[in-house]
Length: 123
Image (cartoon, rainbow, N blue to C red; front, top):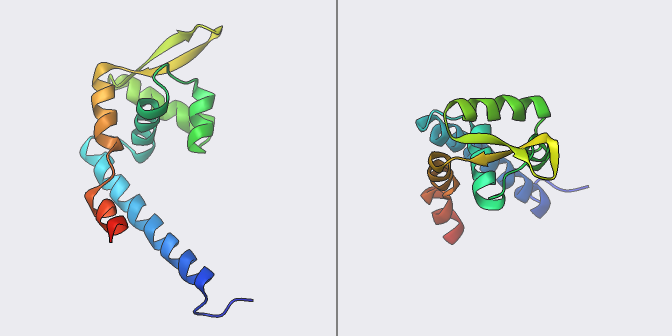
């Protein structure tokens, strides 16, 4: 349907390349802080959109990961002192995941758009 040089194919190729670069830089940036990209995404999510915290299922849904993946990442973040579980005021059987003070500082750092991406968008 589309030719080799069609606009949709060029856009798809560009998006694919951006995805690879972002994934690569995500691993590098998270690794400097001893975090996986998923852990960094959880911190960024909690820092930017969930000051009251989120349930584990909400974190998994927001990041499009499985609940076991989210559970493992949250457990690692809790062990690092970056998040804590608190009883959910709406449901005593559930817990909300919230940032600690150290977690807030780390979330701010991992939430910054990298300079290389800002430069590329500006160009």
